[in-house]
Amino acid sequence: MKKNLFAPLLIATALALPAFAAEDHAPKHGGVVVETKAGDLELVAKPELIVIHVSDHGKPMKLSSASGKVTVFNGNDKTEAPLALIGDKLEAKGSFKLGAGTKVLADLTVNGKPAVAARFTLK
Image (tube, rainbow, N blue to C red; front, side, top):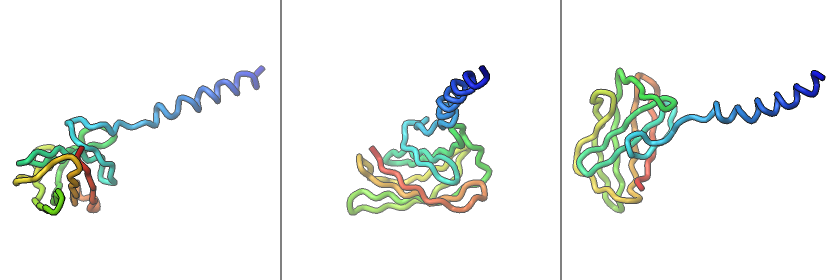
């Protein structure tokens, strides 16, 4: 009798595991999300401002220190801007040419962790 209960219990457990392992990597601010070793980075790009939100498993990460730069590639145009820590996010101000297919490279360090590079493609 014990063998008959073990198999269905094992199957039910195996089917339930993927639901617990799933992480929330969906954009929370209408941007584009990239997973990095420093956390999930969500880039929200506007012509005058680029914002990067950092999260850990879907929850906003408290930033004690962060810095870096963004490089925006749109066709033959290349624009660089420094990232500054503003509250709980990183911001780069400037004049950016944006559109579908624009690529943004973000090089940054977060909370003293090793530097990471994230590549975003705007939709």
